[in-house]
Length: 120
Image (cartoon, rainbow, N blue to C red):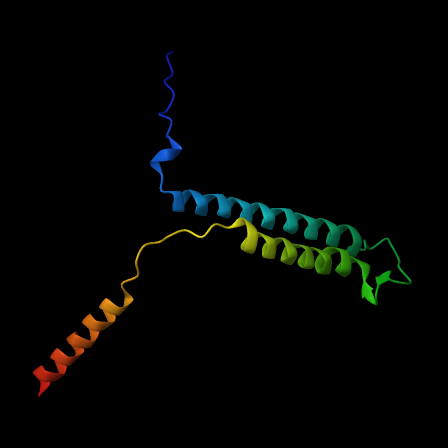
C-alpha cells in the first residue's frame, strides 16, 4: 500500500502576527498546565487526610496551612512573576494596521442625523 504524506505547509505562508499569537498561545497553555499540575499535586499530597489518619496539629508556614502555602500561594506568586516577564519581555508587538475608528464614528453620526431629518 502506497501512503502519501500530507502536503507540508511552509511557515512563510502564514502571517507573522498569526505565528506570534500561536507561539504565545502555546506558552500560555504550557504555563497553565504546569502550574495547574503543580497546584493539584501539592494540594492533594499535603492537604488530603485519609479517614485512617489522624492529625493533631496541621503543619503551617507563616500561620498558613502548609498545603495552602505550597499548593496555592507559592504557585500563584510564581505564575504572576512568570506572566509579568512573559508580557513585558517575551511577547512581540505586532503592527495590526491603521485603525479606522473615527471614520466609523463619522458614518454613524451622519446616519443618525439622516434618520432624525427623515422623522421631522
